[in-house]
Image 1: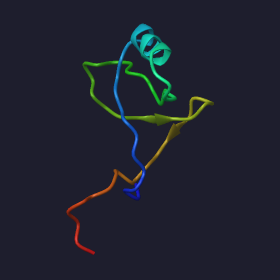
Image 2: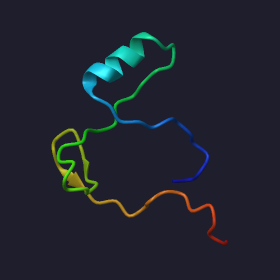
Image 3: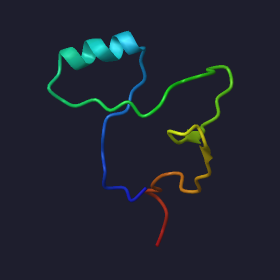
Image 4: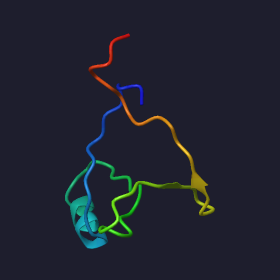
Length: 65
């Protein structure tokens, strides 16, 4: 949320992501999955399947200090 880290973010099926990975030298990192597209909520869940509360929502480029 500091605003200085950049990485391309996209969604795709596992097959599409695997196909892209074969054709690029860039490392792809899977950060999540879409589980219910008709219910657009964002949840952060750890490896033990525990829901994590988060308060930071990203960098606000227009916020005055």
